[in-house]
Image 1 (spheres, rainbow over the protein chains, first blue to last red):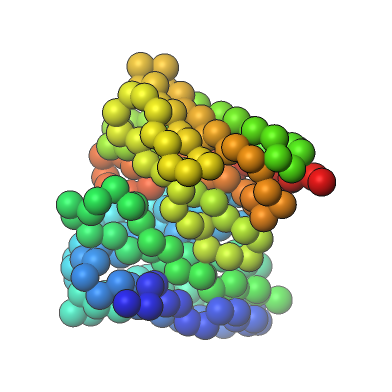
Image 2: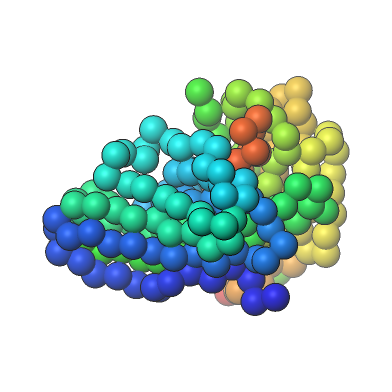
Length: 115
Length: 109
């Protein structure tokens, strides 16, 4: 088990372009979460999946954002028509029900810079 | 709404003890987590409290009072590598974490 993997680690894009990030959770974890973190702040919840079902989306997730988790395995987060305000660290985490209270395991994140 | 408050910055001396406080007002409560985050890295799990009282794990301890909406993280025998941000997070009814803004701890020699 290699933990939660995110790809890419860094992404620089021009304003208006579309970007897609990938997250591979821990294999036995059926819950997957996306968070966004800006400098000096804690992570903000964006959305989460249980298996392939997207169960909740934050109001932070505008219609330019879409997330998928086909087959309940990896997940992708796409941002369309990026804006400078989208610059942030995008963190993925996974967990499973009945966990032994070791919480959510986070990936190292994708740092997005919109120029 | 959700509100989690913790101090923005703290400074302590190597070898000393530091207590980082967290107060919360959330809709739903399934437990309180503390995470450590070094700059540019992922948050890593430190502790979890769901019942009132103190949980001890090596140099780190965490306390919870549900009636007061209050928790603290206690770090003993501080080391330079403990310089990091410490995040307080509450798991709410939707089974996701709501985080505070984090406390940046600077350990000085």
